[in-house]
Length: 468
Ligand SMILES: Nc1ncnc2c1ncn2[C@@H]1O[C@H](COP(=O)(O)OP(=O)(O)OP(=O)(O)O)[C@@H](O)[C@H]1O
Image 1 (cartoon, rainbow, N blue to C red):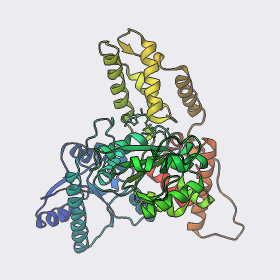
Image 2: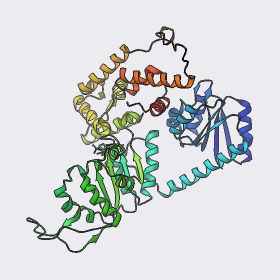
Image 3: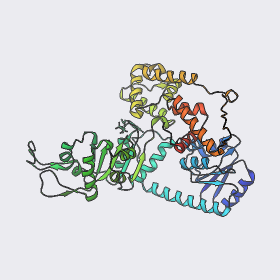
């Protein structure tokens, strides 16, 4: 039996949904406001959420990230609205909602869609139970991270290749090791190939190994990394740096699972599981002809995109607390407290170096605090404080214009009246380009100035193909 929650202030519609859900023999809860719904989602394990868009205390679509952050059970989400809105539907789908229902909806269709969502959820839960991950080394349980754990569970439960993408320091190698440590191959090696150092001359002997006497200096036989990964995992770090010639040879090993060590007459085999990581955009590299499309398709059977730290909400605080208590323990010091201003500064910083940078910054602050019992903002490195202060001053200077002070945007069409839709699109695109240029593409500031939700902003960026 599943638990279905509706957040909608339309009592008639809630009544209709209640009788449908009870007929399907599931439990039903209703909330009339976003806040009430978010409270229930934090307390109860809801399986399906039916979410209205126009609520008395806000817009359901815009509240999606808060809803996901607060939910203890990551429910499947249906968006319900009285207005058919293609941009809203697009936003909803980008945010990963299950379905988008326009009122009045047919009971038969709603029932069928609910049944499909519940079946999908059951299968998903069964898969997760089959592989319960040991995430001991990974700190942070924000909503974007929970999504990553679902993909990691898929990776740990299969032997398919996994491609992990993300900015530098987001934890790509740590996540790859964790997938390996949770897989059936955990008792065998996790072999790292640093593709940035894989020159054409070194590649063959590094990957495939060589026979004694194969070249000057080959005084004894040596197995290559591919053979060492037999029964285990071969991790191609920085795979975007792999030279094209190496990509070709590598593809051959993947297809044939056989290779010939240097100087050997016989081919040999290795049964390895492949994982790869990169901070480059491999699709763009494929378009530019610097990465092989066929290799990318093979690598990306399972794709784990790691979000940058600045999009992981409360994880910055969790990681900081973890790191500080670890440092206190290692240095034999009593636990230190952390002042709120310290977190405010960390939360306002963009973290280009992600978790790695956060760990270094916290360690620097820890050292600066000496034997003091509390960590204050002033203990943080100057560069971090200066950048945060500068951004906040600039934000003050670039402030939102009140609606009635807007410069007159009217343009005379001189008799050639364009269609409303085409004109609206042109203006939306123009607005996006202007605000991105004025803020240097700083998304946090764009959201503050424009009042757009993150999901709405990204759906517009995607719609108009604008570069940030
Ligand atoms: N969620 C996390 N919890 C705890 N530690 C983390 C987490 N994510 C990353 N780290 C730590 O941050 C550091 C950087 O992680 P890692 O080397 O895996 O990043 P990466 O994305 O592979 O970096 P690069 O692209 O520069 O190779 C490591 O010390 C790792 O243990």
